[in-house]
Length: 208
Image (cartoon, rainbow, N blue to C red; front, side, top):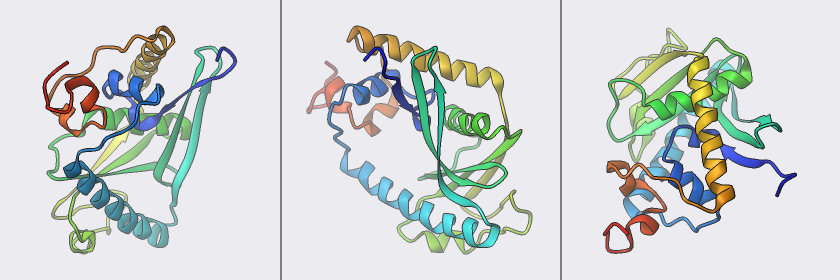
């Protein structure tokens, strides 16, 4: 393992370190059924909005990127939802946030670092079984600033401090991985959405 770089995902940036650890150790994912429904709706939303960004604005979809550090012993892989001169990250949510979530900012920030872009965009779209019904009301006239009901767009500048914080967290998880010792988890409302909930809380929902 000494010559092999540990592989993190950009989508794991500043997320629960315990969840990242379990994924690295190969524990099977067990998604709650209600989360599966949301994931499927999210895929549909990405596909519909991605098609618009590709056909109308010439963006490349699902752009694979890698940031590598042999010195730190790990690399970060990611897939930018839409990329041209800057990255766009699409997030489907059951309710739209007033401000972007920190871990979404950290993920986009990795893409900004890779692209050497000064800014990128976070698009939050309200989840729906039929995303066409949501996206048909979106105004693209001021693209990349996009407006509409059930839609929020944020222009995000690159943040060097946030990138260093992200790298530090990945490195801490790496050290726990090497010691076979799980790091502390978030233990908050996000746990019920996690595919490793069953490890931390057991099948009956009691904390282990």
